[in-house]
Image (cartoon, rainbow, N blue to C red; front, side):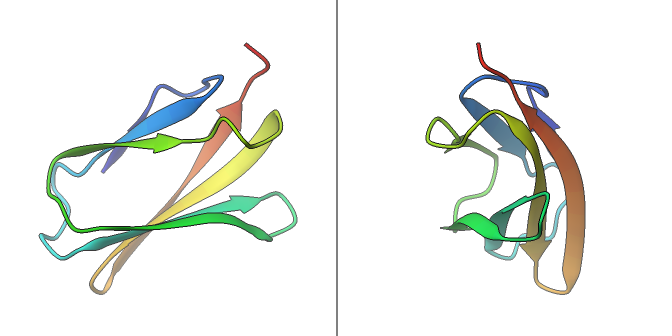
Length: 79
């Protein structure tokens, strides 16, 4: 999968290209490992995830599809 834009001020897009066609679970963690958001996605393709309610900082985005899991660092900026 691909996550963009990174960094960004409010949201990011998950591009599921190359992922299993299973439903996706997207989990947003802060740097302490606390779950900040979790989304269950049933559609295939690109999905916009809103991060406007998160404070600026570094987050880890875990995308799970079936038995496949990937974690990417995402930076939320002020603007």
